[in-house]
Image (cartoon, rainbow, N blue to C red; front, side):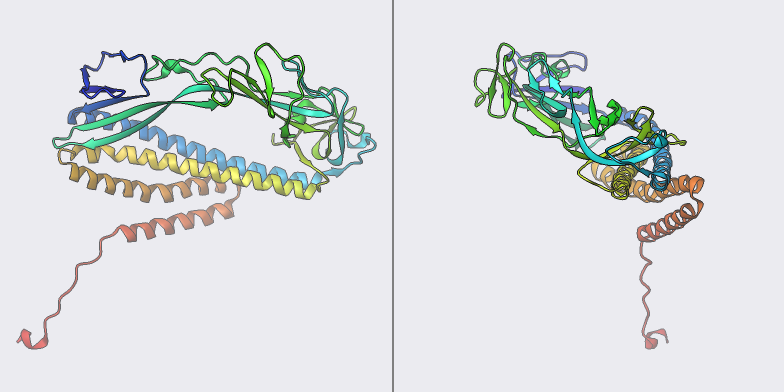
Length: 415
């Protein structure tokens, strides 16, 4: 393998072997390009390694799809059971008869120990929750790759690493940059964090911290801060550390806040002894702890949660399908590399291999989903298997080449 490095605007590439690194003598460029050529035999070896990774991806996708369907069935069952068992509770008094039950209650939430960020002196008042979002102006690395197939089976890959200055809400580790020289970030001085009230209540009920985590109706907060730490100042609706917010420098910090003020809330939770509301854990282990702003019926809250679970189920199904498709494509990749001495042949075989992977991935995904449903809900599972078989047959028909045309001679020419 031969590797070339193109750094910044240098016109002549620098050549090195695989184990040597030639740093940028210019003190850190805005882009670095690696040009790597891999021989045919080495590519064949890499393709077989990729095929093994593909097997692991297919196995992982099957496990994910099976687990996801079981999780979805458990969620549906638990929510249906909860909707039948939930008890309506009053917001002005605690009924000891509801201890240990799943209850629905709506009322005004308040606190005597409001959420507060003591580091910057932000919060207080009637805040149930306070969220601090910290951003720092940092170097970031973006990577783009283009690949070219060559006659003889070799492959040339150009990988460009470009460096940009931008605001990010997490620390960017520059030690893993391709070209770290001149692109160092200082440590993040303070991190994002959520502060909760230590005594949130709904009427006579005390809200457990685990249930308060489900209260997510954050709205932007203009911080009224006094006695800020050295170097920080208030600018607009944020706190800022740096010389000029209109022209930030690496290491500048800005902080925004959002909060959940005291307001009317509807809760679905377990009523524990002493009037403490906490997430409800059913016999199957599924936890119900829901909070929405305003007066919302229990039925509407269960419906919203069921929709949320449905969206998550479809997202995980899509992830499982993509993992399976990638795994099957990797398993077939040696076929295209073996004929890669002629790039056109590799492209054609690769396209056919991908189509084959797609033809297998679609019904196989449905079969795994169906098998999982058979274990939990047999009638639906059998229906899904029938759909999978029908799709497999249809895709196979589409992939089959058309029959050769039949030419008929005129009757007179047969004599």
